[in-house]
Structure formats: structure tokens, C-alpha cells
Image (cartoon, rainbow, N blue to C red):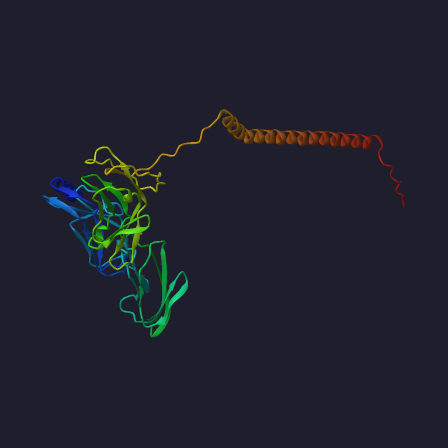
Length: 391
């Protein structure tokens, strides 16, 4: 194993890669849970421009495992359960991909990668060689598909707001009889594309660009963009992620946003507002651009007699309220009062404890003295006994 690691490191020095994203692990078949004895192939997917020798390294639970673009398990055992990562050359390792190998009578399978907006299929399947009959599906312990011969559940347009908790109950035949078995699965949908960010590009004219990034395994997904000024659409949905303002004028001032959605409209996201202000400029051949992704309250702009404007997309700083000496004194008093009250309370508690302790000591002393006096009197005055008659 040590020789393989040394060879991997040696070959990785030959790799000259410009990796745009971290690699990702995919499974074939795509299920994240399989039975013992079944086969599965893992592939290291990466988007890069590479020159030289490609070296893929695999890790299981953080330990070196294999070298190669793919890793295949022919007959899975329980020991194959774990978290798998891959690495290209000296790039960052991929996110962990969890594989569970089970030998129960029943398992509920979900795809390894689930993205927001996906139509997801869950499969409730029994161990190979056993027969199954009726199946029921539940979400958060609520029936969503009652008893039927369907062993698969289709979930349409899944969201990524929280973990998805599902379970299935199925009749599995054992020794000519059918027994009920239950299996569970929990998963969460990954982000299909990042929330868009509206930016300004300087040039001969002002250009707003709506920037977002697709997940590497879904980079072929077609996205459409639209732009709005003060809530009014200024560029309808299209594959163009930019909006140009050829010549600045007062009408171009406003709060701009952009929206991104998939071709099927299953996932839609909106950027934070960006305030753009057309302002008079002495030179009409140049622009000064300042940009921010945070909402800004625009200052009123008065139109002056000029044919030339500059486009400003900027955030205005918040002016703090003036703090007078009287305000400072009040603040100091407010901060001191709680401490003073705590100290007084502690002093009072200590005084009470001391008083109780001293009272107890006095009582014990008096009580002991009384007992000694009684004992002394009993010795000085012995009790009179009657004479026992003799027979």
C-alpha cells in the first residue's frame, strides 16, 4: 500500500490542472444503500482543463483506498459501509459520499445525489431471493401511498427546505408466510444553483450581470435569466445573463434585481436588489461604477440640463447618531446598576447566613448547658427505692 501511495504522489507531480470545481463522487447504480453481495461502481467526476497524467486517488473514511478514476465493489460486505472521497492530482478532495451496505430483509433506497426541483424515486426492496407483496409509504409517519403492489414512490419537484424523512412497510415472504418489515431513509436535496448575485461591469456602456453557479453534476442544466427595475421587467427570460444600458439617462435610475430559473420553472431564485443611480458627469466618455449586492435606499436625483450622465451603483453609509456626554453618563449608569444590585444581593445573603449560623451556635450552647445541669441534679438527688419485702 505504501508503494502505491508513493507512486500516486509521484505521478501527481506530473499533473498540471486548472480545476474549476472540486471533484464529485457518483454511484452506479445511483442508490446510496445496497444489500450485502451486490455490486456498485463509484466514479470521480471532475470538470477541469488538464495537461499531463491524470491521477485519481480514492479515500474511505479519510484513509487511502485506491488509485483510478473509478472504484468497483463486486460483492459488497458490511465493512464496505463508509464515507468515500476522491481527489484529482493535488486538488481538494471531493465531498464525502455515504454508502451503506445492509443485510436486513428490507431497505428503502434513495439516490446518492438529490437536487432541488428533482423528481425523486424511492425504492422499497427486499433482500435478493425473497418475495415481496404489498407496500405502503410514509412521510413523517403520515401515509402518502397506501397499500399497493407498487414498490416505488415518486416525489415530484422536491425542495431543499429540510431533511426528507420517509419510510416504507412491506410484506416479505419467509417460509411460505408473509411478514411485515419496515425500512427508513433520510436525505436532503442539494442546491441546484447558487442564489444569483447582481454585479456591474465597467466598459463603454453599463452592463449588469446576473452571476450564479450550477452544481458540477448538473452543469448541463439550462438556466434562464430576467431583469427588473423597480419591480418592472426590463429584459424577459432568456439564456442571456447580462443586461446592458447603452446610454445613461434619468430613466435608468432605480433598484435592479435579476431572477434565475430552470427551463421547466421548477426552481427560481432572485438576487438582492442593486441600486443604480444616473448622475451628471462632466465627461460623457467615461463612467464611474460602484457596486453592492445589498439593498440601498436611493437618494432623490434632480435632473439638470445635461445630456451626459454617469451610472452609480453604490451603498450609502449609515451616519451614526451623535452621542452626547449626557448620553454616555446614562449608558454608564445603566451598565453599573445591574452589577451594584448583584453585589448588594450577595452581601445580604452572606449576612443572613452568618446570622442563622450564630443563632444555631447559641441554641446549641444553651441546650448543652441545660443537659449538663440536669445530669448534675440527677447525681445529687438519687431516686428513692422502696424496700423489697423478704419472705
